[in-house]
Length: 482
Image (cartoon, rainbow, N blue to C red):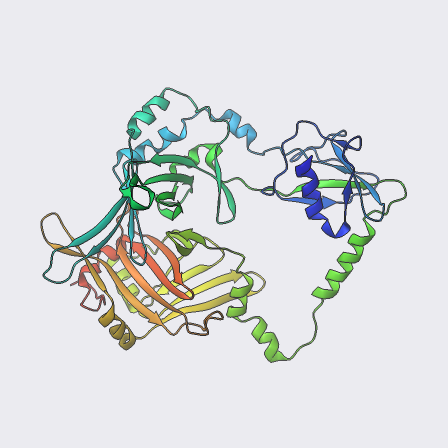
């Protein structure tokens, strides 16, 4: 009863509700209420027609609610029926380990570039964190740590499940991913590089595989949850065949509260509260300049700060997303991209991102009613980039097996963004362009990090970039391949 009482107290706190628990409360073996499930209270009056679909109600499943003003209501509590239960019962396919087996057998790896470290997840094998440095004419220096390695072969795990028609997991674990309660399949990797901070105990990582129909096994986030223990979230379409691992919608469950004899349809204090809120929301006349200030992108950004970034490796990751770019011929696409006329877009959260090579990086949100809100994260200035490149590495090499060098990443500086409220300075961003092989030649992954307040790193990864990286000059500037 404690959780139910807590819930209604939160929903209608202004009413100072007192719940009569005991003979006035009737609760069977219904699922417990938690803060992860949204609820609302409706006041239907004396006569109410109970719904026949969605959340169901039982006549004996109710609470008697008494307000501070002694108003009494009988509140019918919904059963938390899951709309996907029938599909889950009918599912006769393979379990998650078997569904992921093709990914493990391919010996494929996913990468994530951050400001200093690169993270490598070789699925079913290991998780590695490394940094490469190579100056002209010098040997390549690699600083690396294995965050975890696979002790039990993943093909053995898959084979042990292959004989099963469907895995018998009753409860699939879930995690809050960008505000969405998301089911995942965990793969544990231990035996990593010894950790000095934990008496040389080996590092370990849980790789959480999450269903995403359009993903290409991208790394969504990497976090050090405790000292030398890590958590990696990987988006994959392979799990989506299993109904238990798909994103589940979170419908708002309705509590129906009927007034008992002598009580108003809705509590008096709640009606007063509604009137006060209407008064506060009523538009007031103000000077035009002030109205414009209220709707500026900076104000909009501050308003949407409740869309919290994910913690990734101690940095703030704003969002990540994979899209598909134009089906133009490679030559035409490269020309338009390098001219800045073809822009790349990404992001799966509230904010989206636009990168136009040699022009700008924008952060934007589109609303049907309010229109498009834009924050300029950075603008291109060639001279400023040259100055930046004198103090920073604009072109990073990778040493191939045959001993030849290949450009791996180029970095460009974009300054003079919109002024940041928190620092009083212009936003700025370092754009990192990286080759990323993919089954889809026109896939592009765009993610944004904020290692320091209003100083960003925009990662752009695509097979299209592979074709032009080797044209980079000493300042990291690209050109059309000859």
